[in-house]
Amino acid sequence: MSLRLGDIAPNFQAKTTAGDIDFYEYLGNGWGILFSHPADYTPVCTTELGKTALLQEEFAKRNVKVLAVSVDPLDKHLGWINDINETQNCTVGFPIIADENKNVATLYDMIHPNASETFTVRSLFVIGPDKKVKLMITYPASTGRNFYEVLRVVDSLQLTANYSVATPADWKHGEDVIVVPAVSTEDAIKKFPKGVKVVKPYLRYTPQPNQ
Ligand code: BEZ
Image (cartoon, rainbow, N blue to C red; front, top):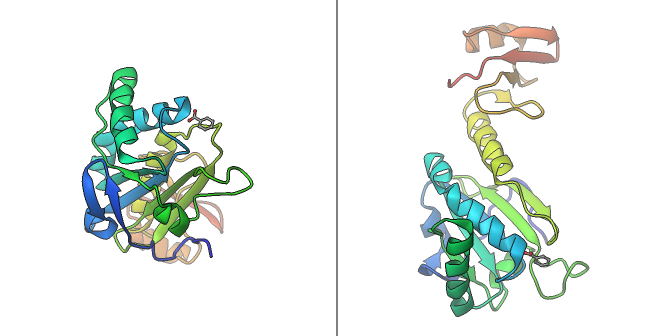
């Protein structure tokens, strides 16, 4: 059965470009992103891994460890990393899993047979410190993902894990957030000393509480 939000992300051991890893050990107590791409030496994947490498500091600031996966072998990954570094002006510093036996792809349901029988689609999972799945996105091979959007969601997930707030459409770090419906307006005024703006009884904004 495929994974759903809130499920425990399955642990696994895998061969990667940074040596053998145990997924949970790799994540430690922080956040994680596990993302698949269809194949090495392909153009869209090259730009995706390059962009992830260029944003590595942003992921680190958020205590997020990144781990890529494809079903290609290790020697192919290692050669391809040179091309990614050269063409995308970056240094890939995160491991790429060589999932030749499709162990990880199967555990995380990354092969969608009606798209391709053999290659993983562009799946991405954000995993919290509790090892639960917080976000799942799936893109087709033809469309590269927006890694700024991934960072934006991580910001929202980390904020809403600690405060009784939700983030509105297109929200970005630093903008006003929404008080969750479970909190009464009376309690919200106490909880959020920066102020609560009541637009409707169910639509209440407050400045981002951890800013
Ligand atoms: C790519 O990464 O460019 C790609 C991979 C598989 C199919 C189409 C595009």
